[in-house]
Image 1 (cartoon, one colour):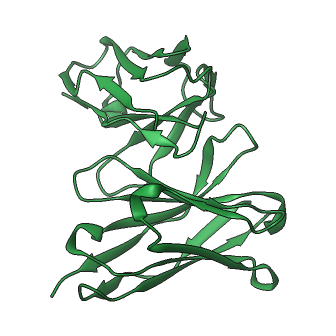
Image 2: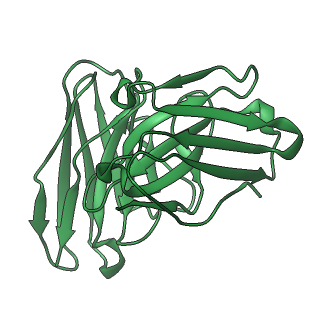
Length: 106
Length: 119
């Protein structure tokens, strides 16, 4: 199975900050990496697909990149609505796997 | 628009089974695969498996050791997930989700079904 490791596990930031989250795969997964945002009690929301493509309706302050084993998600100018947990997920091979998440706190 | 509507919360005793439905609308049911994901309290999501849209072929994660079954009723545009031999650590919210296309990103999600396993 492909193991997905996210770092940091949590971070504290302020409104307006730029933050970068990292996701590392245990083997190369090409660009089959997707990012989700989840708030407590809510369904995961797709933000980024295939490593760097912004899902429709997602604000442009979200950006992402990477390929192979190393990926990043950057939020430029944190907004109050962005405080949540972020998960990466690979669809390169089954079983699809998620990272353990990065919690972004105020 | 694409909608996935799941059945309601369930409570089961250890050793029992549970079957959750996912009724879809807004697209051609057999054109797209359907995936099942669960999330235990305080944990990250866990992919359980999928049912192929065209053929009905299924594949599940080895983590479930044959306890999970995916089925569908194409006449009702509904998919089902049945989990047997329930344990307390199966307590979780269970989601059905549909990829946008073959790239595998889960664009559409059901609202989730809480399954509580308790004696």
